[in-house]
Image 1 (cartoon, rainbow, N blue to C red):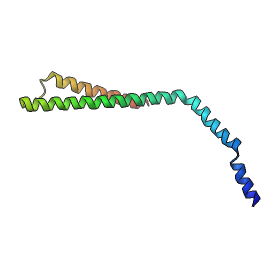
Image 2 (image 1 turned 60 degrees about the vertical axis):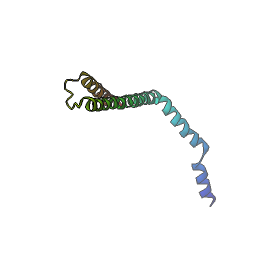
Image 3 (image 1 turned 120 degrees about the vertical axis):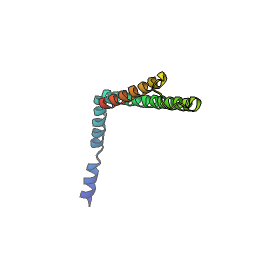
Image 4 (image 1 turned 45 degrees about the vertical axis):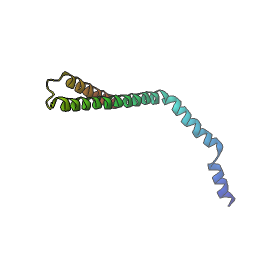
Length: 102
């Protein structure tokens, strides 16, 4: 019985535990720049996604207003329509580019 207890005590040896903690701390120190870079990229992606949703909302509002005010369904001559679409497409491509870099 004492052998079993001794084996469990040896497994829970604090030196071994502290070695594992030191290993993970050193590993984090070694990769901290990579983790920081990934964190910054994810924050950028989140910020651009919020901007993208705002642009999509502006486009929907523009289409809705033009439809109700002027009964327009063809926006091929509207400059603002194309500007908003280009902005949305640019942001989507930039998000994809950032995701590929992760």
